[in-house]
Image (tube, rainbow, N blue to C red):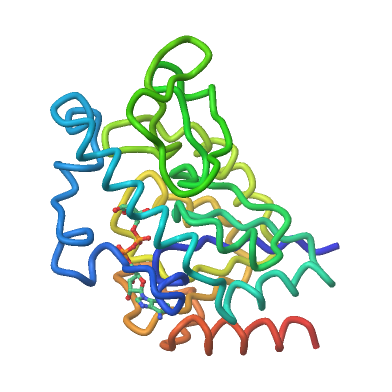
Length: 227
Ligand code: APR
């Protein structure tokens, strides 16, 4: 089976009602990243950070996968598909994709604030202050903050080196190391990019550009690939 690797960013969840990061003048739901998505923010004001991610989780649980998520899942009928996502929502899983690598973690699980390998399911939408891991440290959202390691990056890079087809959806390629994954795709593999505002791709002119929203652009590419 041919291997398709899909790298997605916040743009694929935009039409599910979840905000992107750089379309809202640098604020994330009205907050500065430094105040809610860094280890320093957690040390400075853990309650604010915990509440911020509880609110994000509530939005994720209320959101639904859109036509782009469902279309990518249908690719599994004919291809070996790996979704590498920068998103912390679970919309790919709920859309039916069975092989998803979360580079920046997933908000629907909690983790020990002392050991990121200790992760737990969350009942409902919030993690309360005082909820502890088995080592006795406070639970937090299982997401990668700025300044933290991206443990899945080596695995993701290896997956990209084996792509027969590469599809990039809804990412501004503004954040590394995720953005660097594009360079691991073999030269001969067709590369598609779907984004209403195609981001800067450096001197890489090999991308097939589809300047559309994900629900339209991804559905079109998937129909073509399943023909
Ligand atoms: N369909 C497809 N793409 C869209 C849509 C849409 N409906 N709406 C917006 N986009 C595109 C934007 O044009 C932009 O290129 O999605 C991209 C969103 O870019 P960002 O907001 O930078 O999101 P992303 O690339 O995922 O950010 C990467 O940065 O803040 C960190 O950890 C966070 O994972 C995130 C990372």
